[in-house]
Each structure stands twice: as C-alpha cells, then as structure tokens.
Amino acid sequence: DVKVTQSSRYLVKRTGEKVFLECVQDMDHENMFWYRQDPGLGLRLIYFSYDVKMKEKGDIPEGYSVSREKKERFSLILESASTNQTSMYLCAARRADQPQHFGDGTRLSIL
Amino acid sequence: GEDVEQSLFLSVREGDSSVINCTYTDSSSTYLYWYKQEPGAGLQLLTYIFSNMDMKQDQRLTVLLNKKDKHLSLRIADTQTGDSAIYFCAASRSGSARQLIFGSGTQLTVLP
Image (cartoon, rainbow over all chains, first blue to last red; front, side, top):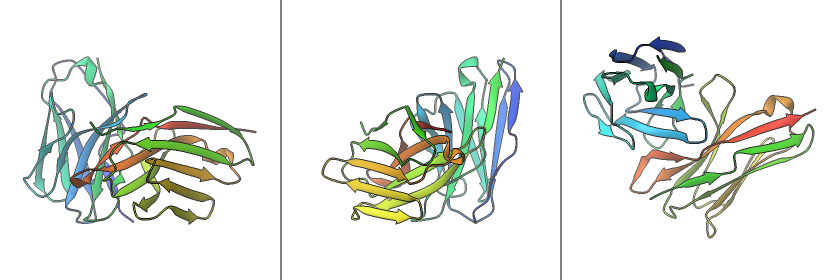
C-alpha cells in the first residue's frame, strides 16, 4: 500500500510567520498534490507537481508556494501566514492512471 | 466551471442501507471516486468507477453511474456504526486526468 506521511498532525503558528508543511511518499509516485479542506467546501487544490522541480498552480494558490527538490518530498509553504489560512491541509500522491492516496492531514491554526 | 455536488448530511439506522448521491457537471470525466474520511483522519479511497461502466460492486459497497444524468451514487448495505464518516465524491478533471474535483462531502451518521 502507498504510504503518504505528513510531518505534523497539528500545528499552531502566529500571523506573519513563514510556515512549512512537509509531505513524503514512499512509492516513487510522480504526481503529488496539496489540498486544503474547509467545512462545507470539500477539498480545494492549492498546488500540484508532476515531477521533481515541477509545479503547477491549482484553484487557490494565492498566499502559498511549494517545493519539490526530491521525488518523494513535496513541501507546502505559507510565505506569511494569515488567520484565513487556518484549515486542514491534505497531501496526496498518485502514480500514472492510479487513484490518489492521501496522508492523515495537518490541522493548522494561525493565531 | 466544473462542479461536483452532494448533500451535506445523511442519517440512517444501523442495519439499513445508506445511499449517498452525487452529481457532476463535466461529462468528459473519465474516473469517478468515493473516498471516506473518519474524524481527524485523511481520506481513504473506498472505490472508483471508470466512466464506461454503470455499476461496480465490492462487498457491501455498490456504485451506480448514470452517465446521461451525470449522477453517481454509493450504496452501503447493512450500514454499521463504523461507517459513520464523511464521504467524498470526486471526478477527474476534464483535460487533466491527474486532477480531481471534490464534492463538499456527505456526513453519514449511523444511529443505533
């Protein structure tokens, strides 16, 4: 089975801080995704990556950036955290023509 | 734009069947998925169906696809308290099968 690991289950940060959320997958999958989940809104795609050093904007990229220096690791960066970025963040990985597999999520609170 | 819609809540009695419905707008979606999310956890893939199929069964789960009406349903037979969770419908995005569009999720509550 695919294992997608997010480094933190819970995180509390302050407004204006630079925040890093880390995601690692163990199955050499090409495609990786970052979503945020808010009640009543489902999952919304922030950024995704098809390969190392490659990234594409999703539906809500504003205020976020990403880094993929190695195939197994995909990092989400909040350049200057704001309270409206308090949310559940989910990472997913996918191999070609296979479903996406998700990590357990990081619940981020910005105070 | 592309959209996936589902009702927000469903309550059923233990032992009854649950039916969770979903509609999508993009007729070119190739794959349709059902994911389950338990409290405090990530999303777990339950099942998926290719767009050229109209039904898929996997133990207690039955997926029905009406491509003409762009309607997808998930039936859970003999619903148990452990089935209480949020269920997400997702459709592959037109032009990019790597991306998914998710519905808002249906909170299923199983009553004893």
